[in-house]
Image (tube, rainbow, N blue to C red; front, side):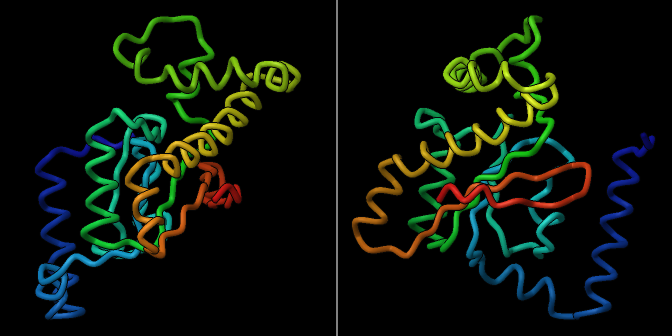
Length: 197
């Protein structure tokens, strides 16, 4: 790992800002004028899974909500507020729920140690594991089980999202709004559509 400091990050930001302005003098003027992304990304907080980076999108092109294990809890006011703003104000056209293989949140449900508050947060994944236990125990090892639960979790979160009153209301009023379930593979940097819209 590197030993960067906050000062290093500020210096890198200064270089990035100068490079952007040198390449396009109006870049920041355009960016600050309007936020009009067509995508909402609901993803994991994992630092290796940055929506803009892995999709090649620029700032302003994707609205992002991230949490541990990319959960869509109806009782999570943060997630629901982001969803409502994205759907009703920004009028995004696509919502992507994106998980990733090897997710630490998913991994945490397979070990027997206590993780504090995260135990409550991950309860839906623990339930998902129990529900699919027969399939999961037939897999060859823990890594295969973790990866399968990562896929199942994306599917479950897409379902939860689609059942939310915000989404149902949007579709009832005829808003063009597609939902996608994707998973990211850290080993090769590729996204895969799980086709669970």
